[in-house]
Image 1: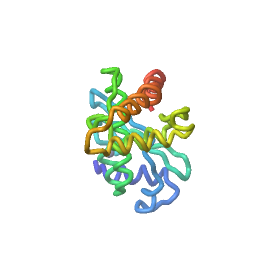
Image 2: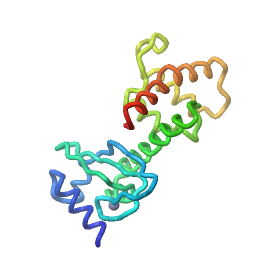
Image 3: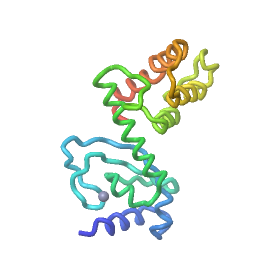
Length: 180
Ligand SMILES: [Zn+2]
């Protein structure tokens, strides 16, 4: 069985453009699930996926799943590969919170890409503290995340407040209704 050929045939059948090199540009990562038993078969026919991605065609709305990160890499798009990684980090964040019921702005759980994804998913809420502009909180967390030196008590308090009043409620809600 030729996995690459299977993948290309499937992707092209669901894309508007019927040339592989053009068709790959039509897709976005929209979700990921974890299979602890690694018993899922990729759309290419390869068995044993642990992370099962869903991708969506931005032009015609078609979905393609299950697809593994190896096949996503075959699209040859760096942005798509990075999005897949961010989705994996997002899943890790949900599982981390589920287990520890606690979050800190540290690089073992967060990344810049993940913060951006949380912002895009609406995890940051308008509050009186961010002048009703959630982007202020998002940008604040990014600047604190990037900071190499210690942060002040005041900054730490604001980080904690954003975690407790925005990020954690968002994650709890996602965990209640199922992932993504
Ligand atoms: Zn595959």
